Image: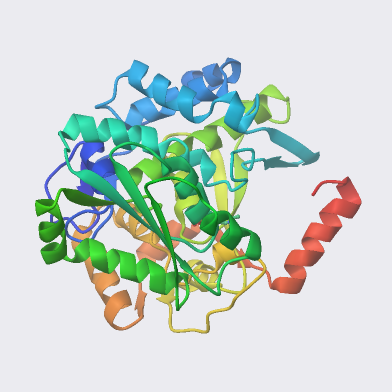
Length: 395
Ligand SMILES: *Cc1c(COP(=O)(O)O)cnc(C)c1O
């Protein structure tokens, strides 16, 4: 399996290269050349396997320059019981037709741990495979949860350094304390003036600055990313969609082959995109419901085909979703335009220069057949949490 840039101006690269680099040289995101398919018998066979083996099954499809044993070592280290308990990703049934996939059993309580505990293992092996001798400097922009989860994953990992940028007034108190108290010889944390989008744009500009990267390369450093723009961060997330599905089959809630929906709280569009890839691979998913807070740029996009970031930025009670420029949407556009890199590059350029773009009606139809977009405000968010707690004693 080889990887291309969504903007089409690079060669084909191995998974190890895509993971080491993070972002493609033309500013695009690395995507697999094609999406591998999984047969229903293989999906069904996951029922009897622990989470780590389900992960090996899925990762093997994408990280073809890794051996099965290598991947097994990586996932066993990442999802060890000392870090995640005995079942890293339990599916808890709330009522007859709703289950919650509990993604918060990792060391920082953020679902990001699912990917960020594994990424350092994938990255250090990728560096060996690509012959990377420079120290890899991981730049992270965070709206709160990614920062701590990335720091925890990369603290004292040999050959790496990690620098996190967070909006100094835009994260919760707990998130801020989690980040600024991080220990480790290779960690740095900066609060910036601005919001998450400013942090993300700044980091992307550093990646795009070739003069700077040449200069640093001479001194023995290479930049990479631990945001979901890095393929190595996204691919571990595909696994838990399969895991949720087979656990629902195992619990007798559905029969293998029945379609189910996933509702995904969304910010940078990484988590939900992983669900979309699971669907393309053959997992019986009907719709992916893209759930937003008052920063409802994605709801509007899914409903109208117009992406417009020129709007007020709200600080909400769900800061990890306070994002107006959802990076991973670029990967979805690449997929629904059937790999039309020129068109994707044009949309992204417009977003950068004019702050908005509109996609073709055919592409919109395609997106609407797979996704449903909706948002709730602050009060509705709190009411929903209260209602579920009162009705089902589930927080
Ligand atoms: C990161 C995060 C999100 C958003 O996920 P994306 O992959 O960026 O869409 C939503 N909720 C919580 C709690 C998060 O930590």
